[in-house]
Length: 80
Image (cartoon, rainbow, N blue to C red; front, top):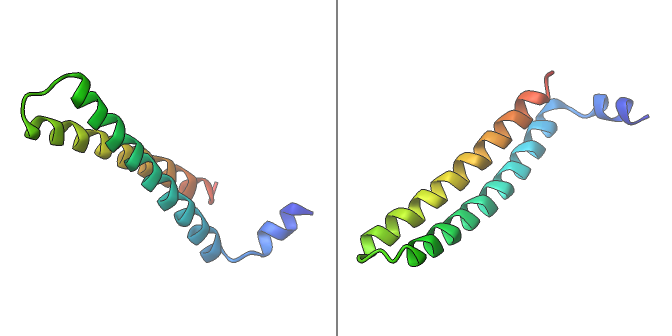
């Protein structure tokens, strides 16, 4: 019964739903990456503020990349 329900839903809604979940997961991953990167910079005792910003930015970038990869795989999986 669930297969007939999913086939009656237009693909635009499936993609929209996947993107909504992906954006939500990406925001969470960016936030966690930023916090973990910032805490890592404090633990590594970087002398300057630039070092802390760079490490926090690296963590946020890794979080964004992770969220994008998951979203991309989910969207590709819709047509397989």
